[in-house]
Length: 302
Length: 283
Image (cartoon, rainbow over all chains, first blue to last red; front, side, top):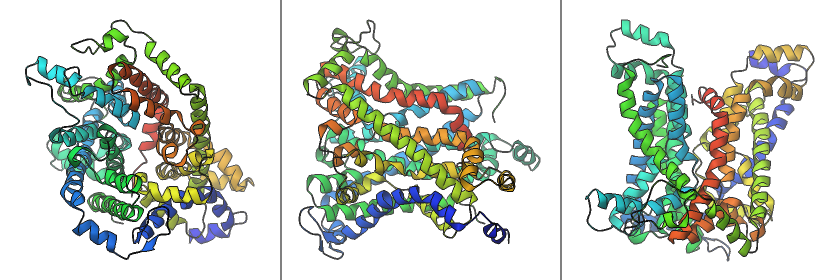
């Protein structure tokens, strides 16, 4: 009813709504929506960026599953590990840190939050340089030098070349920089939980902090939890580029090859754009699946 | 939650959180020290964490490196400031306008548009680098400033956060303005904008971070060196120099220059961010 009434008021034509949305919508359609549609389209073609794309049906997807050994043997297991630890683990860590911070006074809380958030502001540039210096492979590297001085190792380790260490390093860097917008959202959510809910819960028999967290805090900030989950997933996948910044593309022995690096490898190094597009579609689907799982966990049913 | 003063119970939390905070902060402190290290400290063995004789040598070397490359550092700085300025302004203007319409104006397709934008929160831009290039190429934007600007203006997170905040503006205020004969654009300027300053500040930070540090546009859409951004130049510099010990100092200086504007902006605006994040939930 109220919608009807408002729409019919003089001066509130539908057109002005469209006019206000238009500039954003236009750029959104051109630079976000169209590329996604093209990616889906190209994924059914063979395209080398010079000749016209040639329709090949599901061939790219079939090849991806049946004959891309790198994808099956390295990219998928690496991506799953990375996504579970940096995505899910990082998310739990953001929540726990935010929960701790919310129980501190304002001054220290603000400073700690700033420090925890700042790695997510470091660029690809800063990250790559910083970690390259830290993990230099000879004894002049900070990490090697430190481990040798405490006697944990006897000779320097080639961190960024050794396939055993590369993925863990990428994961650690991912975790380090994962306290981003999602973390801030959770913190703000925690600080805005209605205090009277806790009092009511105490009367209902909620005894300790942990029970409070499960039965009161999380249910009353589900929307923030969901927003943070989405941000965390997207951030984790975007940051995957760090592995090629550190170790080149392909990474030694494909040890830290993640799905975004696989796209870059096929798209910009081998110019197999159709195939790269198929991998992109798979990536977008993975993000979508993770997000809808979070939606199931935290979504509010109307 | 949100205690007013220090109590004994908080010591436990400090003990748990402090190590995490230190571990997170150390690498950034390290970059800071490293950027000001003189040559002999860069070469020191065992490597030193703290700088005892800070110098600006690395920053001087950085300026010199660009001079010998033919394009002065000031050109890259100019490009980046121009690009960042236009994108931040455009993005804030367009997303506040769209947020106002999506939240307060009634028109067909409004809900669908909001849902599409919400799905786009999951947009991983690296996944569509190639199709984006094709679009930019088709529009004839390769090697223009537009290729550095236009793809970054529409930022779904920005619109989402601003829209959530506009939702908090009471309809009665807008009704009252209508009664006084205000037009939509007057309401947007005089009622909405002043009330959503925290959300604007937050969106500004997010957009700034995206643009200031963006490598994608310079990497893939620009061939003309003189149009590339500071982030791009710093990245090539860091990439080519960080393999030598002497170059590490220069690379660290470059990193610091890229990091500081983000950090300072966030420090200034952090109060607004927390205020906006309170309404960030997806329902």
